[in-house]
Length: 243
Ligand code: IYR
Image 1 (cartoon, helix red, strand yellow):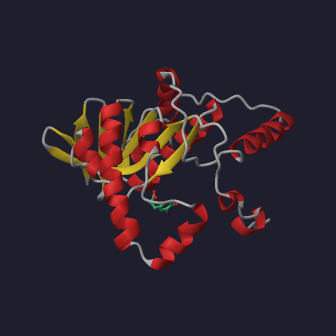
Image 2 (image 1 turned 30 degrees about the vertical axis):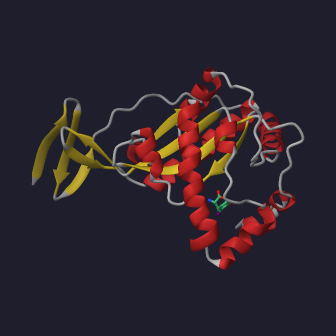
């Protein structure tokens, strides 16, 4: 039996014996294959660049041009994601008052984390990073980017489910970090736990859940970073090859 159902104007799907067959429009892929030597060179250049990325916690007050952040967010928006539903939202905070509010709320959660709820093993794991409940960087850094994951979308009061939300937003955040680092900026992926205060302060709807708070800027003069975090696992440790 064949059912025909029109969902949107140009979007038709057929069900043949309950197996949905999608009709889709295609366009020609724009891809220029470059010489292998150039590919090898680029792979090295990218690795040499990305390996220099460090999470920093001391930011200078130097401002950042909006266009840099806009391009980085547009880059993040190209991330592969579930059913191309693009289940993310990025909130850029430059406003001093809001940054102060975020710091206050984050420090409240962090005090609770460090002094009350964190299991001892977790605190032990964090020891080599030297982190604590003081989050001065939330006020000092010129830009905060709150990344939200959208569990679902509401259209005409109907909930439309998103797919692979965490994976999609994780990939988008990775691209965002890579784009900002490539542009020459430094950042910290900050995850106060819980982060729900961000919905309230940033007036985000309930279908959005804070994923990460990216703290973006330039390092303070003579900024120090934990030695421990520069020790990366070797290729052998992180990969297995079948040839
Ligand atoms: N959210 C806390 C604790 C923290 C947790 C992990 I996992 C880190 O890699 C770093 C910190 C904080 O931001 O201090």
